[in-house]
Length: 141
Image 1: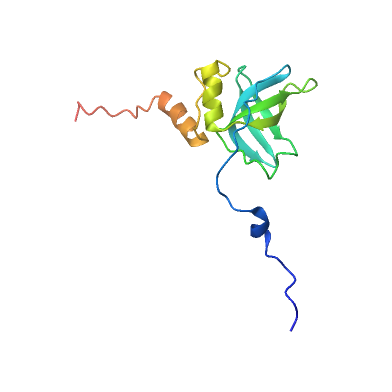
Image 2 (image 1 turned 45 degrees about the vertical axis):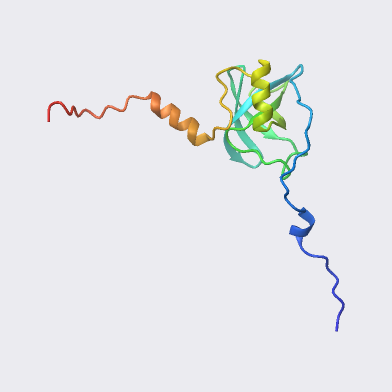
């Protein structure tokens, strides 16, 4: 009978998801960096980011973060601005919801920044601002 050679699959290597994250130091923006919120994931490590300087740019997830840090629509991220391409940014760091709230309290993020809102929530608020009048007046009926 052959000896068993393996020690398990990739789920064993992944480890247990205890959900216990170590407390990390809050990263503030420096020169050439900006805070942004992910609007939409585009695939291939790219996304639309609304930078809090008022410009929407194409964000690119850096290689160190790919497949390790999952970024979704609505996340607050720190992006590095490119000197040679103003319309593109590199995503450097993803903030947790607690860290984003702390940034908002410190005045780093504007008061209009929405934390923990997905793209669906953002789209619904945009639709709420539109006029939904379909032309029927119930008082006439």
